Amino acid sequence: MSGTEQEQQRAADEIRDALRAAATPCACVEVRAEVRRLESVVDAARIAHGILSNHVAQLESAAYLVWSNEHRAWWRPNCAGYTIHSAAAGRYPRGEALSICRGARNGWNPDRAPDEVPVAERDLDEIDRAAPPAASNGE
Image (cartoon, rainbow, N blue to C red; front, side):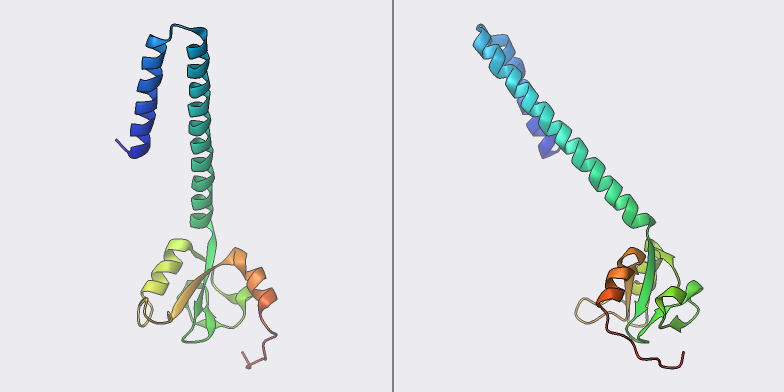
């Protein structure tokens, strides 16, 4: 049983004991207030779980591009070469983009800059706005 479940069980036991011992209307009001407070906590936890689950689902279903620090360009579709144009870059599911980055030339090493980096497609507008104008290199 998790810590939260243990807390909920302990609170339920306290409420049950208080209900058994409640001989005055005042005690019943206090118990009802505690029950409402616990119901609010459980409702808040359910809402938070729903929000987090939705966020995780969005991350998993989002399209990712892969930036190559080695080639200073985006991976093309189907891992077939590189392009400096994000519009021509391949779109990969999150898991595949992470796999590409882990399996790149030198793999993923936390002690140095990665060779390849996954970038969520939805972040491109923000990245493009912050980037200085690029000079053409003939691609």
